Image 1 (cartoon, rainbow, N blue to C red):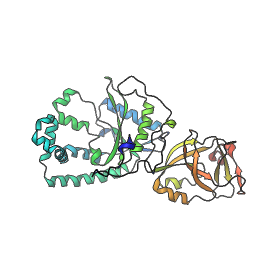
Image 2: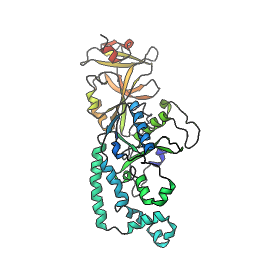
Image 3: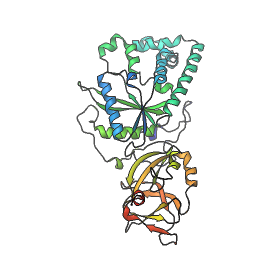
Image 4: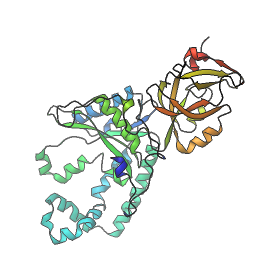
Length: 386
């Protein structure tokens, strides 16, 4: 669906071009949320009833179980921006869109829609500029907020009102329903609602993931993981959702603008060169193993000591790895620090996926001094053998 809707439309004056496919490369979904920082608003800002508080708590527990770090962040700038949607002059944009119809045939609109939209005929130009400057301040504060985490998690809505409540106070109730959504477009964010469960009346509820614009692939990946874990039925039916292995999914993964790189030695967590990843804002995606098709060697002349993986389909074994997600614009400087005979190629993981990773560019009989340490199953096990 994204491959169709994300296409740039040169005839649309508001279209913005972006390469969601990350230079045409396909990605598998995240195996877990290890190393991901997820921001959550403090409970006092949720404004949720018991059902929606329960959805938030369940989603937070699941994110932690999948390896994410939860970071509590004051979301006051977001909530303030949300109020601008109806309380500010942006309703004038709605009036602009239907002005001809509402002036010619006002009865064609629902009474509530008409009442809200007609309010857009009165703001002055100076009101629009006042609000625009205020929104710019909120947007800058939101940027600083979101820069502290990889993605945000919030209630989708505070509660589910009854039809009677909606009929009695439609504008107030709709504003309440938009507490955690009305700021999304104003602040230029991408967002995705994720089902979490059903209340006692059988009505659905969930949480919302959001991040800066164009982070759709990251949101889809996290949502796919949560969807898999909560295993809800299909829609309002009792039909069970197919539980395919995540590794077999064809959905896009982690984040747009990033490259997954498998490391097997000095760049592993806690190893001497791991800082070369963390300084480039890389994040740990998974601790996994290669396919059983590799031999692992120690490069005897390297300082610090380094491993070398060589593909050996006939007598290979599985090697412990970590997969890190690195911003695309940092890949070049990272590669520049890789010494001969190491290089970046493609490594097959135990789930049959292929990702970029460290490989050795010479064979075991090339004359480069190296020791076969495959029996240890990984570099850390070799280093800690004593």
